[in-house]
Image 1 (tube, rainbow, N blue to C red):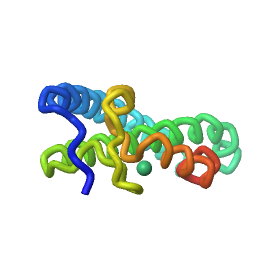
Image 2: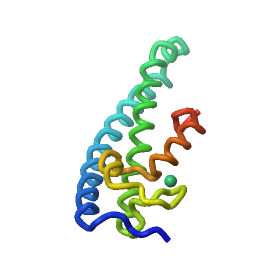
Image 3: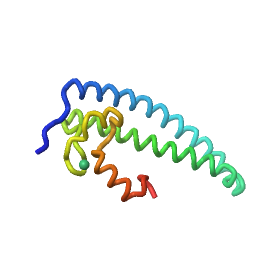
Image 4: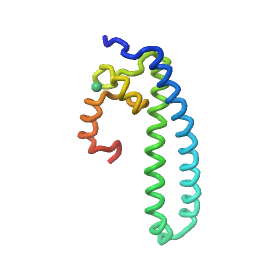
Length: 128
Ligand SMILES: [Zn+2]
C-alpha cells in the first residue's frame, strides 16, 4: 500500500488550482460547444460545398473542445479523488505522482513514467 505522499497544505494548494482550472475549462468548453453547435446548424442546413469550406475550422474547433472536455473530466476526476483520499497516486502503478508534477498538471492521473509509456502506446494522443 503506497503511503499518501502529499501534505494537507499541498492538497489544499492543488484543490485551489483544480477548482480554478475547472471553472476556466467550463467556460471554455461552453463557448467552444456553443460555437460548434452554431456552425453545425449552418452546416446541416447547407450543401456539401459548405461542409468542405467550413470543415477545417470545424475540425479545429472540435479538436479544441475535445481536448478541453478531456482536461475538464480529468480535473473533475482529480477533485473526486481528493475527497476520496486517493489523489496523487498513479492510476496505473499506484505510486505517488509527486507534488512538482501535480503542481504542473493538477489533473494528472499517471506518474511521469506511466504517462510516457501511455503516450508511446497511443502515439502521443488519446484519440486515433
Ligand atoms: Zn505510474
